[in-house]
Each structure stands twice: as structure tokens, then as C-alpha cells.
Image (cartoon, rainbow, N blue to C red):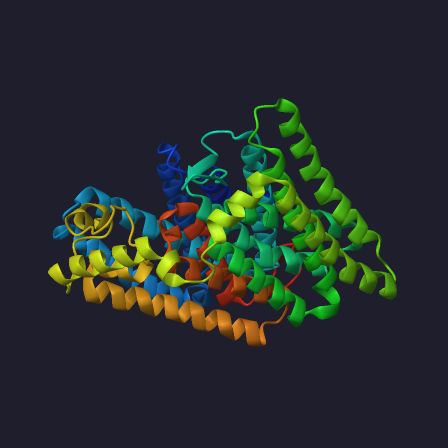
Length: 466
């Protein structure tokens, strides 16, 4: 009976985890049915958690500014069905919002009721991201469709997502938590988390997202400077062997010879394993310092050699990063999109044209090229829900941003600060991209928000809170 009671109390969380896994594996444009499966699972989990809440009447479970601000936005968006130019799309997006709210409520309630829930959620995100990163790297090496994308004459890893930038965003959301769990893991478990970090770094590089590369550098510097002794070596090793694995994958693949593909796969696995075994073997302080200094130097030398030796790698680097940080060169498509979206907003500024209607409305205002997304979540929300919806949604993002910064400054431990970095990664990406519209990523974002609000930094285990 005690076991059944535990399952009844925790079942909603397990269902959210299952929905997140379904969404992460099948979130691309190639699988349309699982999107509805994910929505149904999230709504069922929310109903399950609500039933538990009604039974125990724990009022603190609903003390969540994020939940209530987003709920207000969802109510207004639902009312927009009455004037939406695309009612079916609006209904679908509102149901998705309800699913996100359900995920937020379930994880927040569970984290406040059971110590260690946040650490469990972090581990689930890390394992999922490591698997999807490995899938993306392997598919890139073998040029497997549809998991490898040819964009602007460059092959890019997409993994189970329909967009390579989404893979980069997902791995970067997981990477801070991977470092956090690595730092607090038992000695025998550290190589596992270190290998996961190296795989995530590899996938970020193979996605060739310019923003992703910049954010990878920022996250790494933050963890190295913020936690010098505990994380300097693991972070440097993960970066070094992730970069080497990505360089080898680019340099040795693309040819028709099967032997080259097999060699690249073997090099990817061996580089990650060797790096993490070496890191685990460094026990003395002097040995750690020497390794931390030597590894990035050797990795850089090896990467430079690969770039000079491989015309393919040199071509990819030149084509993707030749403009540096010149925004006029990097964002011409986005700037045109922003201008067209602003024109669409001015037609219905108060209440918008209905949630999910941007793709249809924007057709009349596209300047240089057509896109289904504004590549700025606030601007797209303004077009679809007008000033009222944009204000509510911006309030939600500002609250999460402020909470993330607060946890970074005062968080009880590495996991809390890892969730803060993860949330900021997602928000920054959506200022210049459209990851919000990939259900799995947004659902994972809701998990990070719930864990931030709960402030739980206990070890995993699911012990009842006192």
C-alpha cells in the first residue's frame, strides 16, 4: 500500500518525464502525431497532480508568479480564438500552453513536496541531452537523413530536432547542469557526466550555430571562473575533447568511403572516452594543474592542424564564421523579418491576429524571404496577441530572467545555478530564433523555471520535505 501511495503521489512527475522524452525524440517536423501525444501526456500529468493537490490542499504548491502570469497570458490567448485569423492554429497553441503550464505545476509541486526532485530533473535532462547529442553526432558522420541538414551549403547536425539551432540550444541548456552534477557526483560517476558534457559540446559545434558557439564560450568561462578548483579541469577537458571530436567528424566524413565514416565514429568515441578517463585519473593537485594547462593547448594545436590539413573543415569554418560579429552580415534575414513583423503588428496592435497565426499573417509583409517565425519571441507574440498579450508574456520572461539572475547570485548550490544558466540560455536564444515553437524545448524550459522557483538543491532521491 505504501508503494502504491508513493506511485500515486509521484506518478504525475513520471508522466511529465515520459512526455519530455517523447518530445525530445520526436519533436521535429518529421513526426506530427507525437506532438499531440506530448500535449495529451502533459495535460494528463497536470490533471493527476491537481487531483493530488485537491486531496492534500497544499496551498504553497500554487505560489508561483511564473504560473499565474503565464496562465493570464493563456486565458487571453484562448479568448483570441474569437478573432483569430487561424482558429485551428490558435486552439492548438493554447492547448500547448496549457501543457506547458501543467509541466510547470507538476514539477514545482513535486519539488516542494519531495527533496531532490530538482536534482532528479537535472539528471533526466542531462541523460536525454547526452543521448540526443550522440545521435546527432553519429547521424552527422554518416550523413543520415533527416537528422543531418544541408543549410547554406553546409552540413549541420540536427539530431531528432528539425532545426540544427534547436539541437545547439538543447545541449547548451543541459551543459550547465551536466557540469553541476559532475562537480557533486561520486568519484565513480564523474566519468559518466564528463563524457556527457563532451558529447554535448561536440553536438553544439557540429550544429554550427554561431550563437551556440558564443554561448558555449560564455558558459564555460562562467563555470571556470566561478568554480575554479572544482570545475576547471572537467570543463577544459570537455571543451577540448568535444572540439577534437567535432573536428575529426568534419574532417573525416562527407566522402563516399565507408572506412572514413567508421574511422570518424571510432575517433569520436575514443576521443571522448580517453579524455574523461584521463581527467578521472588526475588525482594529485600538481597533475591536475599540469593537465588543465596542457590539454587546451594540445587540443588547439590538434584543431589547427586539422583545419590546415582538411579542406572540408577549413571551408566550414570560413563559410560559417567569416563575418565575425558584424551584425549587418550575420542578421540580414532576421532584420528583414523583424521589419515585416513590425508592419504586421501595426495592423492589429491591440489584440493581434490570434496565437499561432504569424505564418499566415506574415505572408503579406515578407520583405526579402518568407519564414514561419519572427525569430524573436516577443515580436511574434506581439503580432499574434497584440500589446496586451505581449505585455503579459514579457512580464513572464522578465520574471524568469530576474529569478535566474537572483539564483546565480544567491543560489544554494551548483544545481540551482545550473538551472539559472539553462533558463537564460533558452531566453537569449528566443530573442534571435524560434526555439519556443519546438514543444520539447519549451517544456524543458518550464521544468527549469519550476526548479528555480522551488529553490531545491538537494541530492536526488525523492525524500519527503519536512
